Image (cartoon, rainbow, N blue to C red; front, side, top):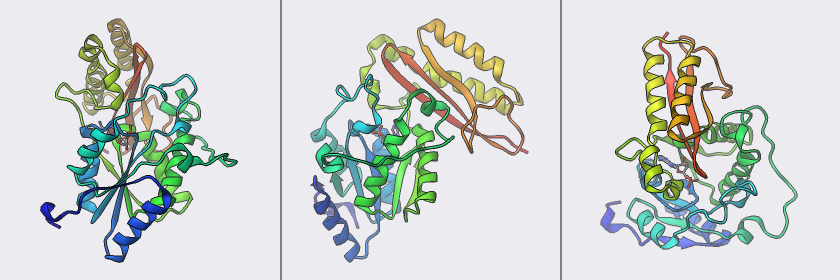
Length: 292
Ligand code: AMP
């Protein structure tokens, strides 16, 4: 449908309303793409909306800051929220309908069930944030059941999330096709994130160093270095000297996301890092396929 003929964007807060809306799309023979977000939308989210709009006739985006994926000492209370600004950005980037439930709609009075993850969350962000991916699986599982999309789009920025969701779709037989959008970066290389808003000017100027470190190590691996351990240690020291606190900076196997010491020909890896600048956690990653 040409953009000037698009209906105005809808916003729904109840499960019955969003289901009715999606049913209307289906009755018109239209496919539905879904992009879950926590709002505070930036160009990274908007790129996923546009990708969904290329792949499906209609795009539903959810905006919901999911309390289940925040640990008690994390930033749930202060997480940036801007529903009005988000609605405008979403409407200008291919979203037809927003689903913006509150906690009562999503979780009701009391929940008795949870999802457990084995192995795939032992390292990377799962290793440092206990309960994080369980909270994400719970909410995405619910959102998939509520919206019932044909496809859903997630960002490579949260690659471990994407990998675990792929497993969820497979094991729980969700009839949803998953697509991954590339990481959108600022001009200086910093991966866009709603949490970048927490950085002061000095921290913002330092922040792209994480990506520079990953790029440097990736170049060495692509150039033939197979055991990047020392390189990674050196990059960690350099980042620490600049004022970063390192959570992890490592090469991980793409399948189970375990740290590996050696990159082998013909295999796929994730080079990933998580660091703190003050209280702000930054993550970034690159996918490496080693030629055989
Ligand atoms: P969030 O609102 O942080 O839960 O993110 C919602 C979706 O946007 C997730 O699939 C993220 O991976 C994706 N996303 C966040 N930042 C970026 C980025 N810089 N580039 C591409 N996708 C992103």
